[in-house]
Structures are given as structure tokens and as C-alpha cells.
Amino acid sequence: MKATKLVITAVVLNLVFSCAIGHAAELKVHSVFGSNMVLQRDKPIKIWGWATKGEEITVAFGKESATTKVAGEQGLWEVTFPAQAANPEAQKLIVKSTDKSIEMENIVVGDIWVMNGQSNMAFGLGKTLDADMESAQANLPLLRRFGILPNEQSEPQMDIKAEAIQGEGWILSTPITAGGFSAIGFSYGARLQRTLQIPIGIIDNSRGGAAIESLVPPHKFKDDPIAAAYKAYLDKRIAEFDPAETVEKQWQKQVARLRSKGVAEDKLPKKGGVESLRSWSIPGKSPSDAASCYNGMFGVFKGLNIKGVLFHQGYNNAMSSNCRPKRYRALVRLMVEGWRDDFNDPALPVGVIGFCAGSIPQTRDNFETWSLSPAAYIREAQRLGLSDLNDPDHVAFLPAYDIQIPGLHTHKKLALAVRAARWALNKVYDMKINWDSAALLSAEPDGERMLLTFDKGVMPDDMSMVLEGFSIADKSGRFFMAHAEYPIKKDAGVWNTANKSCETTKIYVSSPLVKHPLAVRYAWATSPMGNLKINGKEWLPLQSFRTDSWDWPEAGPETNAVDRAKSKVMKAEAARNLEFRKHD
Image 1 (spheres, rainbow, N blue to C red):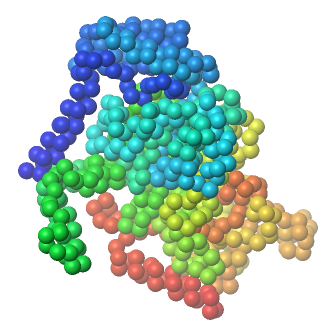
Image 2: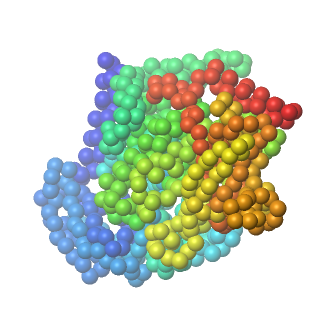
């Protein structure tokens, strides 16, 4: 009961803090508004803030003006102006109460895109391989950024904490400031701005280490049985949480570790108080837990109209002990639906950049062992979660597995931003910019081979006839690296390899180790082999896929997805498959 009271007290204090914003006697506007900002075109422009209840507030934006009275116990006021077309001319936003005036300058009207996800989205332009060239072209006064720092919260917030606003708020793109933009956000936004010739606002609000659970709006967990079961388990953890006991255990563990290293008693750290707990250790506030990052970093500015969202995440859900593809798939759908609810746009465009490649690259020498990959299931869950929305005109999965640098953070971000910009310019802005997706239509056994048929041509972008990244299995479920080739057309209805006129919508996959093939996988590893591109375009990699239904062995929310014993067996089997192929 003591632990429960402590948690309840923390939640109450949090709510009191949030509500106190509204009771402030002094006039305040929501922190997302400020000089240099971009307001969303072609949608009503809502401006809001807080002041003393009953006070009259006047808001002027450009030639528009409106007056309202502060209402409600939270002291909230708001006005809504009619939608405006894109306008690069600087305008003023002025908010006045009886005794105070707030003036914001150089505000333009264009499109706002939110960059959401974890550290590979937050990764700054200045750290990338293309930083010099991209920054040199960054003198783009109509490209602007607003950055929100890590701010996980256990309850929805009404405003952005001052300490969570990066720098001075909205900033203009220059060769000096560009390095602080999200790398993907800058390169994406710059291409949109230069192409469309309208103001583009980028809101960077990704959180390093965030699991997808923390990025889903809180009201959506009840809408799916898998998500609801997870939320019930989290609520149980929150109710049982004892901050003092957690501090004690962490301190004891730290002291034991230091003693084992020979640290003298008088040099050991003193035990801290409950205020020393990091958010990671607090159920409900951890960046691994339901809605925590959304509460303080995205939903915190709902009410502001936006154009769309670009999302890039995956690592924290692809670790084997956290890998639950079925839950992930459900959460992708719920996340997009929740964004559309909160930002009042049922067709809000969303581009999901697939979980990027990391770790050691898959090669012929390690193929089977590196095919044992929870990451591949998370990529599949991202793609299938979007497809569950049944909205291909407004959502897209953008594969990223082919952009490879070993390690947690790839420094190659430009290609991902260009792919996203191509999608947006083609599908969102209806321009004649090349972007496409492909689908596997069928996978049928054909003797000792599997014949795959696609709805588009798929081929290496270097026009090579060597097709990489396929594996094949029979009913045993043992996958081996496979040979893949196009059928070559000689005469009508007859396929062979007699000439070089091939049909790139069809691929034969085979292995001498699999006599009765049943299933095929492609680009199925953390950092996989796989060189096929849609119509041979380097910016359109064919998505990873499988034709089998042998799922990752995930468990309920209260246990690890793969226990150590089972993981050991899986790794041993993959190693045997590799040795069997290499020595057969």
C-alpha cells in the first residue's frame, strides 16, 4: 500500500503541475508558438494559451484578429483563424490581455512535418557523412525547426516544459544551425522546401532509446486485445512499484560491483533519495512504457495542425528479449490512428522508414547464423502494421535495410531522407517524382524450385544478374542460403537460360539442400544481404519478406519473448545449418 501511495502522489503532483499552467495569472501562449515558426497552411489556425479566468484576450495574426474570454478552471483560452494558403511573407502574431502583450515575429505559413521515433531519427546532421555538403546548402530561411528534448511523462501534458525546448525554439536553417537538425529531418525538409517553394517546418521530437510502446497515444491501448493486455500488465507494475525499495536495490547492486573491483569502503557512493531515480526505472514513465514519450513530446502540442509525420524506430523493440512482432504490428496501427485522432486528420500522411541495418553484415560465410534475426520480424511488423490501416494513399513503408554501417547508428542518413522526400512529393504532393512500391503476388513450388511472382520488375540497380539475399526451406523449417535467378524467355510459354532476355517480375529460388521447397525468405537478417530494387531504382529497395508462417516465439507481456534456453537452441540450429551448407 505504501508503494501505491507514493506512485499516486507522484501522479497527482504531475497533474497539479500541468494544471498549474492554466491557473497562472500571467498571460501565456502554448510553448510551440514563437517567433520564426511555421503555421500549417490550408487548415484552420488555432492559437491557445492560459491566463486568469474571465480575462479578455485579443489575438492578431497578420490581418486577422479575434477576441475571446478565458474560460474553465484551467484558465484556458483559444482562438481559431480561417485557413490560409502558403505564405512566405513574415507576419506577426500578437496576443494581448488586460495588462500584458506577447509579440512573435517572422511567422510564415506552409507545411509542418513531425520527425518522430528514436535515436536514429534524432541523430543530428552534423554527425553524418554528408554533413559538409548538406550544411553548405543550408541557407534556407523558409526551412525552420523546433526541437523537443527527451521529456517522458507518465501522464499527458498540457504544455512543453521549458527545459525540454531545444535552444530558443523555432530556428531558421543556415549553414551554422543545420548541424543541429535531425539529419533525416533536415535533408527531407530541405528537398521539400526547395521543390515546393513554400515554408517547411520541422518538429524534431524523437527520443533515443524509446520503444514503440512509449510513442503510442495513451487512449489507443484499449482498442486492441494485445495492447490492452500489455497495458494491464504495466498498470500492475505501476501499482506494485516502491521507489524507495528500487533505490535501495540499485544502490546495493552498485556497491557490490564496486566492492568486487576493490574500491575502498570510504570511496563507495552514498545512497540517494527517490529523486535520484532515472525515468528508465519508473514504471509508466520509462521510455519503454506506454505513451510516456508521446505524453511529453508529441501529444503535448496536439491542437496544432500539421501536414504529416515521418517515423524511424525499431532498435529497442528488436532486442530478442523485447521482440514481440505481433504487439509491434498492432501498435503501429494504433499509433497512426491515435495521431490522426489527436491531430484531427483522418488521412494524416505517415511515412515509416524501416528499422535500419546494424550489427555485422550478413555474408555468404555467416548467412544462416545471421538469418536468426528478431530485427527482420520487426521490419515485417512495421510494414504489416501500416497495411492494416488499408490506406496506401496516405501511409508508406520505406525500406532501409540496404543502408548499412555496422553499429547502432548508421551515419548514412541522406539516402533515407531522399527516399522519404520522393514518397512525399509523389503521394502527398502529387508530383511527377519517381517513387513506387512492389508486392509479392505468389510463391509457388515448381519442382525443386520456388517460383516468385511480383507485380513490378525487381532487379539490382547495377543491372547485375546475381540476385542476393534469398533463403529457402522445406517443411522442416530449416532455411539455407539459396540460389536465385530470373527465368529467361526463349519461346512463348517456354522458360530457360538460353539468352539474356529475362522477365524481372519472376524469380526462381532453389538450393541443392532443399528438394521439396515450401518457403522463401528475402533480406531476412539484421543487416541482410539483398540487392533487389523495384524497377532497378537505387532509392526503391524491395522490402524484406517471407512466405512462411513460422513466427518469432514471442510470449506474454510479463516474460521475456525468448527465454535463454530456447534462444540457445535456435542459435545452435542456425550454426548447424551454416556448417551443413558449407561442407555439403
